[in-house]
Image (cartoon, rainbow, N blue to C red; front, side, top):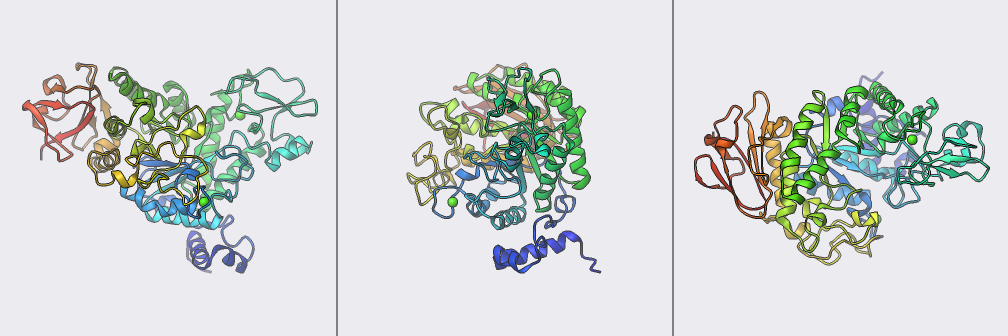
Length: 543
Ligand SMILES: [Ca+2]
Ligand SMILES: [Ca+2]
């Protein structure tokens, strides 16, 4: 009997499959022997020495990132080809919005949880992508849409047709108690047979009934399927809404906390290194409760997102300081929080901060701020270019094609893109910004590199002194055994002087601090720093 670990056998098979063409290899091997359910990658504990909360993640809307085959739709091969760009940016993890078959462009209504949307590629393309991402030192996180399926998923089709087994996978009722959906209307939808079914979001997304153990088991199997293929973790969509309360609560019910605890624990039993990051679009105390009471591996810090954008919009650090202080108190030790300034559900910050014309300094400041504060930063594709929103309220305007080249089409595709780019400005492109120190892209690159180089920035705590003008933000980042870092930002549109004497300094003499970014500093003397408008600087003990 071979002593080779099971995952290595799988890896060899898949390597052979990729080398010789996935379909051909699949045909040559016994059914089920290749990838479906066979472990193909080393367990995360061996693959990753570091914590999943370390590093910087990048959120990709695959359909809009890079088209590889000239059909105007971004795909997995295109994404794989762009991994060197992301590695060069310092990215260590990727979150892909849903990649499964779905009748919608966004994919949040899944019809098959175990395959890849044909427009985005094949299973072989996906495996090549995962292998390449791992070679580049990036984790892969998939969106797991557990709360609901598509109304065209075979489970729901069977349920609606009266199949007694699948009927209990959803909630059908003849005379339900009224429930308000997440978008404001009734959460109950006409099933056409005298009953109504629950769909908290829209009629096309019926809620799965996770009070039924069979449903929980089915979703655990889906998660395990992808983990066996080398995926590292999942972003749990709509995590607050998975199980509704008996009293009509549709968010953060006690039963929902119990589901998060059970799902996470059972997944880690099967895959000890797997991790879950929840779409915790709620208040700080509630997010903290998911860590404390449900053992959630990582949350998304929506309150900090609001505070970061608010600080830039109001040109005032006052509320942001308060949020940082609240975070320092609210979360249990070791709670990992994904931090962000944009995602596929939000108006892009470049448009919010400067609606009339691009303002690279403001977009760069926001990014530098995100990357200088506690948490695990998630950068949304295009954010690192200051890419604007398209016009109008359509969600697709938040998910427009990535701008690679300075040409009108942005180099996304040889064909007409599935949706028009949000801008044709040549300056909003990787090609125009790469190498330009004044660009948003280079601000992100240097901020990510500084974060990686200074442990206090990556993993330290944060204290923000309040004895400063509202437009100035100072944050001490401290970590035991590591040199502290002082984050200094000027949120206003005019120059500002900061006197170090105003900053109580933990373990460092403010007069003894030097910039960490290699750039000079204007100032009136030791400990007085002049900050131009819209800038952020990092200082540490002079060596
Ligand atoms: Ca394509
Ligand atoms: Ca639900």
